[in-house]
Amino acid sequence: MPKVGIVGIMIVAMALSGCGSTPTWIGIWNGAGHPTTYFIVENVKVSAKDIGREYRVLDITNHASPEKSNRLPSGTRIYTVRGDSPSKELAVEIGPGKFLKATYSGKAIP
Figure 1 (cartoon, rainbow, N blue to C red):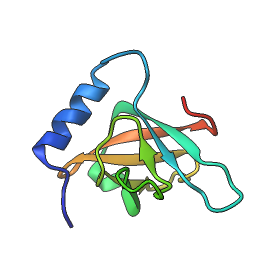
Figure 2: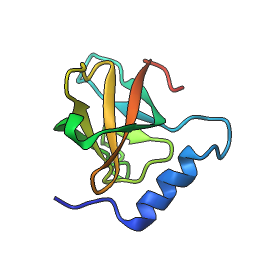
Figure 3: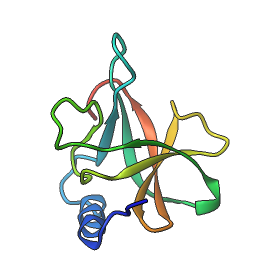
Figure 4: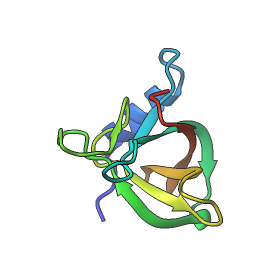
């Protein structure tokens, strides 16, 4: 399984460190007829033992791709969190064994 490289980690670190007032978000497409749902990536760690299955991989270079983000690089892996519904909380991989919490924010870009 490929991992996000050092450049990707640096981008994520810069994005989450407060560059601007817009939060880092991810958009997840839920299928035809359903609106994209948005999650705000927080600077809150998720333990590797709490990571569930791989949920999505961002492919923001493909315009037909339904997954997107305002700051995270293409190839970023998104996981479920054990015990939590993927409709409320996800985990974003920012490096090998390092994850941040992403919390549901609604159906409009944050």
